Image (tube, rainbow, N blue to C red):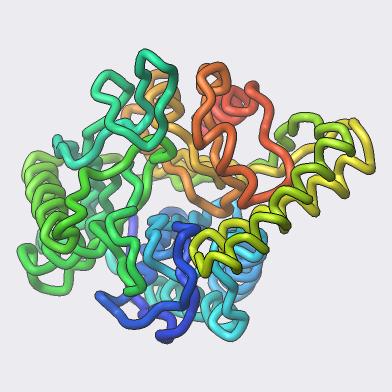
Length: 436
């Protein structure tokens, strides 16, 4: 028998926190469009528990993961290898990543965030009842591959109709003994980047959850899990983004309802997990002279932005000054092996495997892992138990573009090496094999 419970806590920050995801914001948040939540599902079979949490956050860092993990392991008997903290990656939420150079961190908010997530997990654990699991899929087209090749080379953040894409909505349905839905876990790969203003929002993930729960009724709660969305964006209407987000929510909700209606029973036991922290190699730093020149350039850019009264450019330039200073320090230390640690998890729920990485993998990673998986059903997530930045496939390094050449500067001094994505996917497959 398998038991499960679900619970939700409000993690909406106070108005006035800095939002993260877009570097062009130069003032703090001004209002709340809709609330942010952490929704937890705790499952138990044969004395083993697992917790899956969906959070309306830009990401989850290792500090938050470790704090939550310590508390629920000690208080609820949930092994840390069985804990998945997945962030929706909303770009209209607070910065909760101290290493991220986009938006200031509100330490008071962070002090309570971990405890709120623990509360959701503990309430879900207390609410466990016998359930039956079923798995279904459906199709929803709200996204596009944003990496597009033109005659003059790669143009990032643009519509790429020929690029890899996965429009599959994957749904895990948990029903009570009387056949009523208690929890609906749904996953889709798409960047929540609909809103660039100063309003706090859960974007299309929250809109979808609200629609699902209004249709299902009862005590059912839905939980969004972000997939490998590194190169996938939503279709956006800049003239009326709120209308477009509601449309996306309705499209995804319709797909979730279809997947629920056609879902087939899943053998839910055993529950088992494997976790690794793997060192990903970083590229070598530039010569000290080049790093110093970059620092000087960006310091000049700050001064010029102030002179032109261009606060948006000033915010960007200050972030790049911070990056350049770190780059100078690394360059002074010289070329030597350097790594960045990636959290990798695989959670087994009977016939289902949930693979997760603490980065922004491209959709190719999910497609590749799914094709190689030994499990009957496979769900691949990014943004889980950490966020070290983009994790592009090797081919993307040959093309260049934002995910390879620019985004890493907001997370650290150096970019990953091209072989890192293969290290991630190979580790996942290896861990799956250990759980068979």
